[in-house]
Length: 482
Image (cartoon, rainbow, N blue to C red; front, side, top):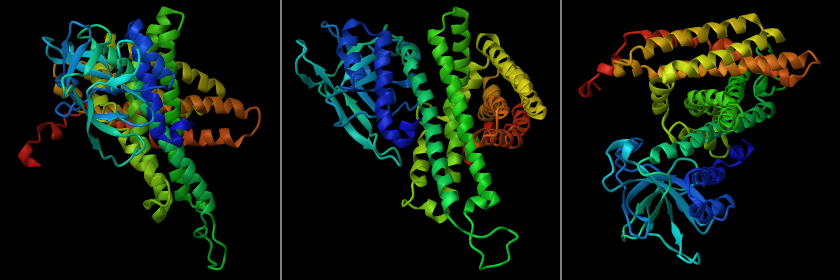
């Protein structure tokens, strides 16, 4: 979190490289691990994921990059990739791309996608000097933020000499790639928290130091000004930032814990249960910090006033960088469809039942610690409402358009509930700590939990009603009507 907050672009090289090396570790043979994985893990080389193509965007079923097998065992790739973060730079001697492509004769759609290791420069057969691998930078994407992490357009095989090395089984590339994609989605969520957190800390410091105005009842114009932190609306904005940042961090830590348990828990049933919960929460962990975090960053800029709208102060840069988090690694719209269209009904709703059990355990802990019953009852009611809505929407699977019509609203309400869960847990821990003595840190936690329950949780009922409604305004609107 601190590395991301300090420089998200610099951390991007580390995160992408770690994900690429882990993918080779999971699916590569001994030669690929020795040649590429070890050098990426050591920092000698960096890695990327090369999925997106100009004509396909997020629709990976439309990937057209071709891979032709050779008698030597490698494949020759030909095609183009776009928005490849860290796809070319001078920091290391080599960049290793994990690229999706279609082997000649592969099935159409996602079932025909394979995964390849495609280095910018490949080692010679004797393991000596690196030689050019026919991977060209065809252009740069000029971004409004993340300036330290180049986003490039790559052309593969213009000279017919781009060697790719199959990673995993043929036509199973997308399934393998989801390992890196899901890791990256959690990383993007943490980026969102970090961008919001550093802006919050900057806004708090500014609010404490910036004198302006006087208390509402002060009538003497000669009285000294007070720091803007003394104004109620500034405290409102700061508290909202705090609630978003620390609630989002709790969500990310929980999701990461489930990811670890899914991979390393001793008990197989526990691994499966953690895996279901990780899959269920990943769309939220990626999207919530980006969407609510952008609002938090905007509040940081607002607290700085006119200075915030200038490049002389830092909040404007973090605001620009935050916006990308709702776009890369799947837009918020894509994750809303993933949550409602795939994750909610998977295995007959097993993940939702697991979630209900986890939240119920937290509520029992909170009640035992003395958390306000009104808060606990509000979360319980919202959870019950979401579970009932989920069953109703899954029952509409025969009408796919109707089922996902309000998927964006469903993601919003689901996010509010799981972040409320995080705040109730933090409130329980804070209540227990305060029994040992007063502490501003825990008092602040309780205040933020109170704020979240009072201002965000009531929105769930209205969003549930909208999802149940027959409103089809943006389903039926036609091109000419815009």
